[in-house]
Image 1 (cartoon, rainbow, N blue to C red):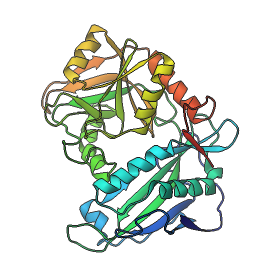
Image 2 (image 1 turned 45 degrees about the horizontal axis):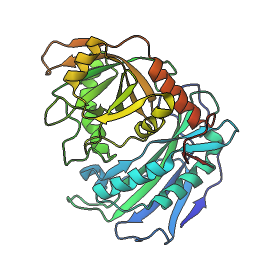
Image 3 (image 1 turned 90 degrees about the vertical axis):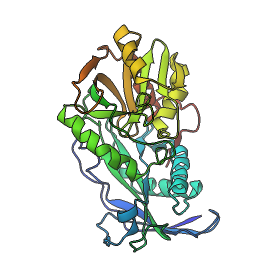
Image 4 (image 1 turned 135 degrees about the vertical axis):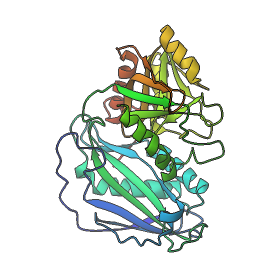
Length: 361
């Protein structure tokens, strides 16, 4: 059980429509201190505080800054059709967060403790959840190693946070078709590594390729596997889908791909839209051929932040010095839009969720 200490509630944050993602923060955050050898069961009391958002002193000796014991989640709270606030599939995020703590040898956060904190925090900041179309409150749970030491090894102290920010359309409210760079030289994760953990290291590894992509006027990078340099893994922060007739193709989870909650949700609702979900090893060489032949007509990226982003062009390089090859997908995004519309309707309570997907607060 979690015991909460709460500050006096501040006025909701002010914002302009479609603010730059991750820059307009709700005025409160949650903090909870944990020990590696702490409670073995969630029946033991945990103590959390909800405080005014403020800068915290962070010593340069903090272990998280040196050895990367940092994990997080990204999830959203939506204003529902009836005016209430609902958090989308928090149980999946709780399970993935706990799996990340185990892989990174960090303090355990039991799933029901995680969910209690999400519920209490979201209820406290509920008046910051936007009502405008295509807006939501993005929730960011975070766990960092808090020992003060400069020595490789497991930290004993950890700090758990939840903060939030106003989220509009990821591309400023525009339904933009993304241009994506694919280069066989780029690697996101290696078998046996951290690909399944939502840890800062995976995102740090994507920054340099993303910088090179921006230089070629690309919005994102699609990473291929580290062994064959051909099978699709995922984008820098999103999972990948392709449309082939009535089939919805996505790379099978292989230990190097994040278990995306949006990905899982799309696979779950696909049959209700007349689509056959197919999880498989997806060769980029074969995909490129099928796009040119017209068998694959659409592709899109998905994740909590962007929800679903249609892909219009793939810019392919064999290596860093090779001449890029432009691969263009069909102009219409009918299937992509259909999937997006259904998912958004479920998230906002306009269409009944196929299960206990929405936690109302």
